[in-house]
Length: 138
Image (cartoon, rainbow, N blue to C red):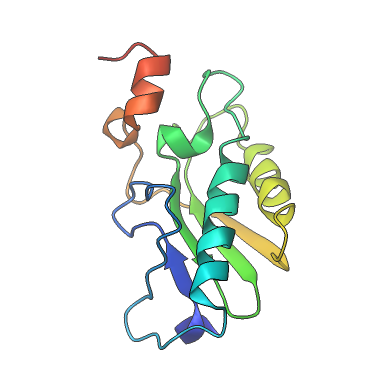
C-alpha cells in the first residue's frame, strides 16, 4: 500500500545522504517496519546502488545522481525511480536490471520495481561531490 510506504531520499531528484534517513511521503502514517530496521535497509540499499556503475563513466549510478527516488513499503517491496544520462544511453537495457539485482540482494528486501523516468531530465548538477572528484569536474 503506497500510503504506508517510506521514502528514502528526496523527491527533488538529488540522492539522499546515506544516513538511513527515511521520510514518509505526504499523508503516510507510521511504518510497520521499525525505524532502526528502516534505517539499516535504507543504508544497505544505497550501498547496493553504489555497486552499479555506468560502463562508460567511472562513477556509480547513485553518486551520478541517477537515482531519483527510493521507496520501501511495509511489505518490504522497494520502488526505485531512476534516470539515465541520456535517452540514447547504450546501457539503457541493462542498467535497470542491474539496479533491481543490487537492491534485491539486500537482506529484508522482498522485491524491487525499477522505473526509468525522464522528468526531471538529468544534468551534471545532480552529481555528488564524490562523483565530481572521480570525474575531475571541479
